[in-house]
Length: 292
Ligand SMILES: [Zn+2]
Image (cartoon, rainbow, N blue to C red):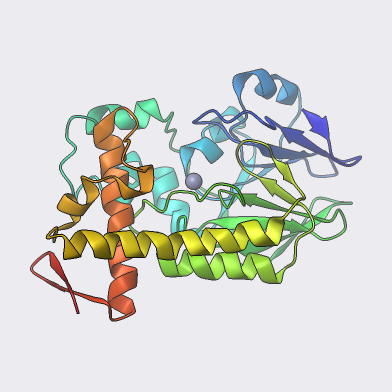
């Protein structure tokens, strides 16, 4: 844990372990947690603190799995994420489990990622200002990774918490409401904010160097993957499953268990195919994609 300002502490900085994330603790008139999944050794710093408010960047379990540790707190989340925060079946559906055959991992998945259902108490929307007393931050809707994914801008303190938009690592976009177009637009939105400091949700949290070139490189990576998908279609692979077998986004090496990462690859490749369809570069007939 490290102190960022008199009121704000950063938990889990530098620990890239799933399903955990970097979180912010605001100790103020209202005690507020931004994302609730610090690592076990950092969670001890929250003991004895009455958390009044939890604002989750999105509903992935590595950002909200400890919401239930604070039963008296009010939970705020973008409305696109509400149903899957409250229902495990909805969480699985949103991850595409009903579209592709991964029945071997389906019964194990929710427990493995520490899914814990918790109904949400209220919504956050783009531009909304949230005050905890002396601290005020602003919601910045940054869809793409998931549709309801949000960052939080702290103008006075001079940083933005970007959750799963990390300048060094292109996050997955493996949910049915993920979108390559939205993700690119969100990166551009972040670039336009000209942040001097980003607090990212995983790994080394505080990023000050080369933010804009790193974000631009993230956009380039999407177009590079588009090209790789087009190459696969030219090579005779026409279904999402056939293309996913090559594991483009995992650089050919699926982590274990393979089937869950293959599912993520299927959805991410589907997102590129949707992006390429919108650009008029590919068409689709009965599940088979072709170059236009
Ligand atoms: Zn996420």
